[in-house]
Amino acid sequence: LMMVTYNRLNLTIQTLKSIENNTNINYNLIVIDNGSTDGTVDFLKNYEPKENCTFKYLLNEKNKGIAVGRNQALKVAVELGSKWLCTIDNDVEVPPG
Image (tube, rainbow, N blue to C red; front, side, top):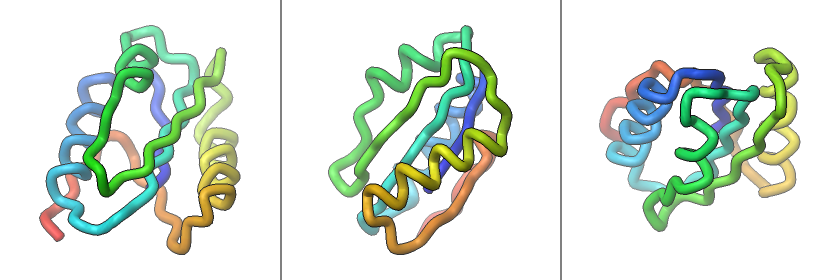
C-alpha cells in the first residue's frame, strides 16, 4: 500500500489503524509525507505497525504534490519487491479482510 500525506495527521492515523486492524496478510506500507507541519512527521518516525507489515516512509522537506509523492512510493515499492501495488488516500477506512 502506498499513501501520500500532507498535514492531515488525524486522518492519517485513522487510515493506518484501519489498515492495521483489518489486514491479516503480510503487506508493505509506504507513506510519503509532503512536508507536513502538524505532527505527522513525528508520528511517522515513531509508528510501529504489527508484525505482518513492512513499513517505510520518506519525508519531503516541502510539498511536491501527489504525483511526485506517488512516484516516490512506487520506487520504494519496487525496491521492496512488492508483488501488488495499490495507492490509498489518507482519508479511507479499510473494511475487514
